[in-house]
Image (cartoon, rainbow, N blue to C red; front, top):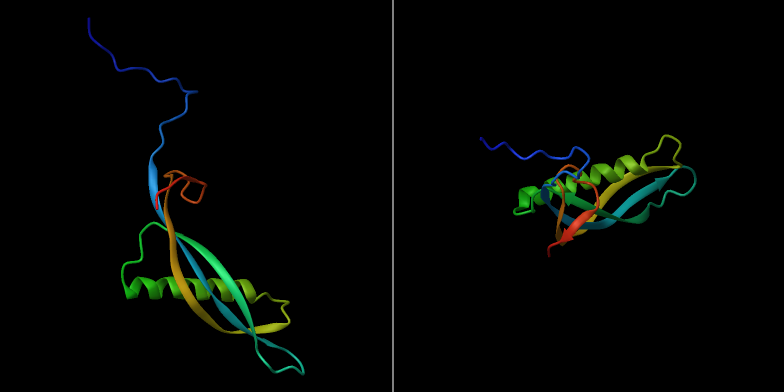
Length: 116
């Protein structure tokens, strides 16, 4: 008699794979220039939390992250009906919060475990 491979129940949960994500906190401010009589730019603070598949290990990667955040902030603030123009976006700090494990099939989903 030959052995056969075990049969899996189609309704049973599938084994999940885990993926690392590095979580960073980025903060700074954007200068907004209002239309009209008030020509004084206003600095508006912002905070962004990023998940990245790899850790930031050098200056080139750090600059990529900063450019990505600047572009994101400019796009969020530059709405067609906004009463201001977005000026400079200054990144004041980038800090690693922690490394997490997530489900590989849902990398933007909830953390399965906080590693560090």
